Length: 232
Image (cartoon, rainbow, N blue to C red; front, side, top):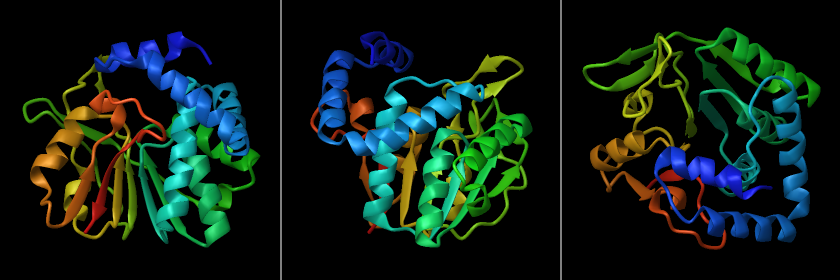
């Protein structure tokens, strides 16, 4: 693991304390090597299939697996496929859970499904390719004709905030809003504008909000990679 990896992430999102986060990840990896073994295997396969494999991803995947084990969802929706899809499919296989993933890129989703096949869990996910819509005036992004999924656990990591080669980092992913209040747990992968909109518009009487410690710039033991909304 290199310091440069976290510094690149910090630079991208305007964060600090990357060296402290890295030190905490190293400590966590030392304390739980078995948990990181799976994450490393997934990322190695992900990278060979054309995906990027920054070292921060290992902590993300370990964190995701821990959340699943704690929350025990029976139905999962993933908005934006990738390395996390393997973690979800593996959980679904072991816990008889329903799992749906959506992505706007057919090629990307095919690569992801190939990776799931390599891990023996491709039969435990229902994949959908759906076009995305980015509203430049409203600064929103969503999937078009998203299939109805009665999920109690949702990951918001899509759609990608890119259009015609330009990235709109201020766009808010809005798919989750018309699902409320069904999901018991909603987690968001960084995406500060989306987290801020959700925190301001979702009633605190419905969901308890825990912001990502990365967004808070708060390095601490067992720091939260994701922003988390838990139904009250």
